[in-house]
Length: 165
Image (cartoon, rainbow, N blue to C red; front, side, top):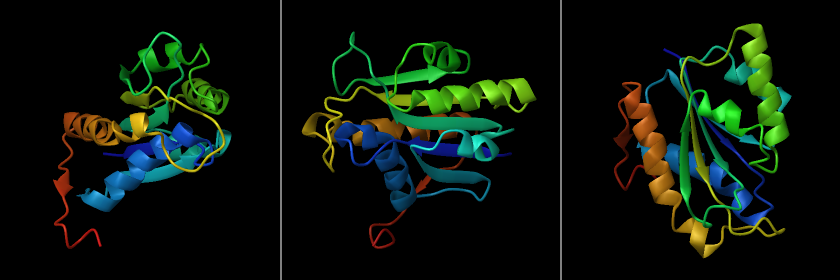
């Protein structure tokens, strides 16, 4: 079993950092089996091709731009819904992810299962730190990532409070 939890985003652009913050919280607060890799992908694109290739489950946490949804809304997309939605510009760095997913399909290394946990940002202005609106959904978005892991049979165990320090 090969699973990757990939957080993407730019920590310098307010809520664009949500994906990175989700994977940081996952690593800091939970024990995961060795076959689950957690990666801060930043704003990388094609550089992630090798990391994303041939996974049993790829879980992506990211900011997802949508004019139709309220900031702070969590969107869960699975499998074919993800590349289909990437045809619309849903993330400020989506070109890179779209290209990687297309390349993986072309090479036959597309993940067997794909989950996107997206959060609608309130602000993408230059600033370090999430808006209160998006910070308030960090834990629920993390819970969705954990649910996706558990859907693949992964045992996710919370660390004791003294372990996270």
